[in-house]
Length: 177
Ligand SMILES: [Zn+2]
Image (tube, rainbow, N blue to C red; front, side):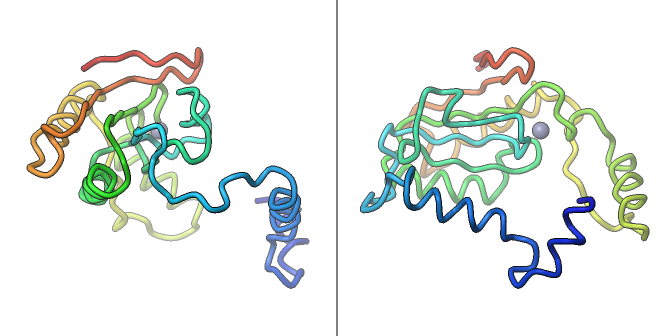
């Protein structure tokens, strides 16, 4: 958000012109999944963080169409993630589930009070009511998340479930469980 934002808000699309133009180029040149059925062609589902340093498909050697991807701050297995995984396993061809938090994650390096303070400063108004699901211990959280998937009555014994740490500085994935 900078000079671009103010210039862009005067346009008819409300600031999305550059992205819409890129989308038209994409539809003409790179778009390759037309007619796909929406199942995970590689049988893979990934739960990971929203962090922009993570490219979930590329880091596993996959391509569009191969995997179901669920992202949130921290890459946590919450109720929505479990819902997605149940659908993935039973209706969308998922056979392997990877839970992938990452190094230097903001959700694991800030307290909720710190995040509220930073967001409040950015917003210029009170943010003390906003909850942020910060992570005290990433390994412990990962173990708990893997257990939550493995013990889910509609997922557990049907598929392989692994817990991994992604290193945003090396691009390497380390299996922890
Ligand atoms: Zn993160």
